[in-house]
Amino acid sequence: MVKIEIKDKIYGEIKKRVEDSKEFASVEEFVNFVLEEILKDEDEETKMVYSEEEEKHFSAVGCYSGAGKPSNICSPPLYS
Image (cartoon, rainbow, N blue to C red; front, side, top):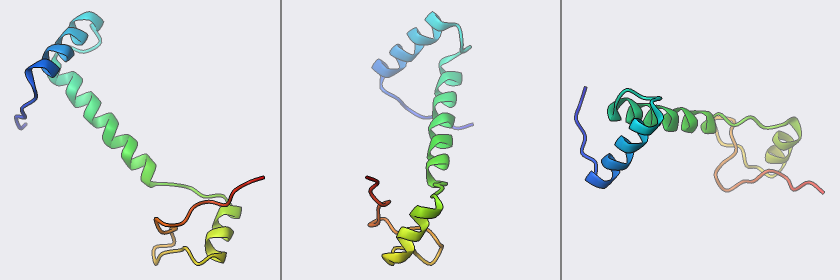
């Protein structure tokens, strides 16, 4: 385990939330949960899945990078 520093105000708000909810045993447990959820959400966001139509669009406009994923400047086709 490592120690981190957070502002007293934030710690107080988290502590109150922990005491009110009884869902977490400590501030540390709450903070670890929140950070794990954020990291999990970021991992899921990077695993985008495109439809066959979107892949054809990206390929047609030359947006695929070497890894087979669209580059950052490409966007999915607009649907009407």
